[in-house]
Length: 243
Image 1 (cartoon, rainbow, N blue to C red):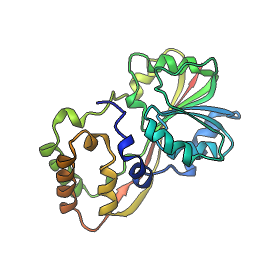
Image 2: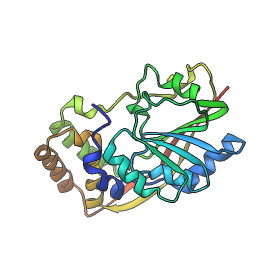
Image 3: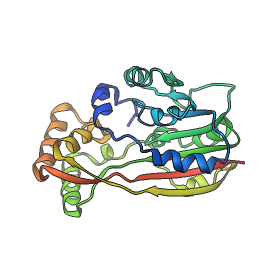
Image 4: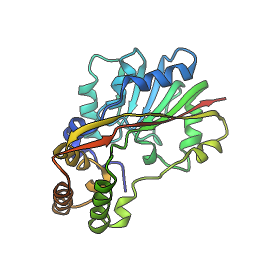
């Protein structure tokens, strides 16, 4: 499945996907141990993470391969030191090197054959690679199991596997990266079932379905949920440093 599926729901993506808290900056900046003047973002989407890093003065080159998403990204980052670039990570070509390279819930869309080597090449010595996401899973185990059962029944298995997963074990084998650190920025938030279901409608697993099938799955999910739910909004963060 391609990562070029989000443009059709760009407005909903911006409205319903979670942003990132200031605590993320409080984890990344001290780890860097030196000023970060420039950053390369991989898969910027509508700029959820872009705005966080650019708001503290970091100049962000924001790669977003989907043109519709990139239009909204440009609009949402006006006035900030952000350069949106409509390009994939693999095809991005530059002589620049960056203090920080990061991806917010997007690294799995990159090519596993080249992503680690390219990341090392694009970082200055001592530069930081940080990969993070915020899965926003249901906290209640029973509700989580009920939604999982619906997805397994109505969504074909190949559609439930998005992109190319990675692990810290993969990262540990990369020549040129060291000092691997994992952190969890724990939080829980209450939301409405309607908002939770709307967020699911922006997830690639659901976007892979034809509209009628997607609507049916979302209807069934909504039917098993109470009007309000708690979601795990923990940020899962992995940091590493170029030698």
